[in-house]
Image 1 (cartoon, rainbow, N blue to C red):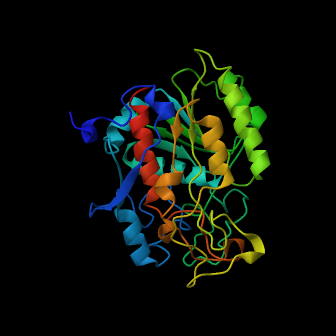
Image 2 (image 1 turned 120 degrees about the vertical axis):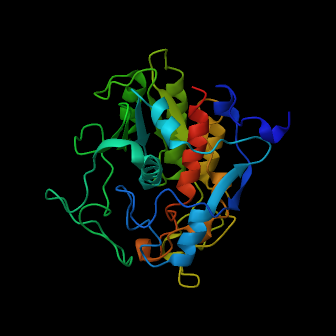
Length: 331
């Protein structure tokens, strides 16, 4: 049997120790959503809606292929079937939110209902545009914020078959409560949490959270939900070798603050590799995104220059969904 025919995730033991290597290939497949055709899409991530047609076309044609093993294509129907009766919770900042949006849009044909706290509705503030053209500020396709366990105003969808997906941002204490099953989420052993602590902490703060999460994994039991960690993706601001936002030193490059890369791993990525790999299911995204600064949104005045954190959609976050689907198949 050839190596490329062997599934990348053949058993549960592969989930925590497999750091994929691979390449992005260009295909001409019709994207499963585009230009706000998905009810969950954001105008600030839809590069074609913003008029960035060439960039949007490149982003939509990207498909990730693993080297040395096989990744099955994302199958929306089978994904929804596997999730029947299960709860999926996506935890993290706006980069995790892009994974929530991707999974929701790839499976939008099988949505039964959704509860999305869109900006500008029910007395919520309009969504900030940061200079992005054709930006929607109110209602569908605008934006919605992360919420905590204490908030009822949270983004959640339900699929046919009864599976649900929810987006949250939680503290270390709240995550510990989730792991132990002591929250109103009532997560059980078939349910799944996919988390990332985000990019808004110092190196030392982030390392402390990595250590806390690794310690929490020692307290899981047969009734605990599955905890997956989505590794931090590469950031592509100009001015630092790791592409992280350099503050006042940031300067636009050719009309955008983004560099193509490859960028070096940030301290956040290094913390995750040293503290978490081998201890819980780990979805590595740094290596697959280090050279993809040319498909970041790029435009606007986010942080004083362009948006070099978030990817155009459809695009790279759909690659995360594909890998997650392959991991989900073995649990």
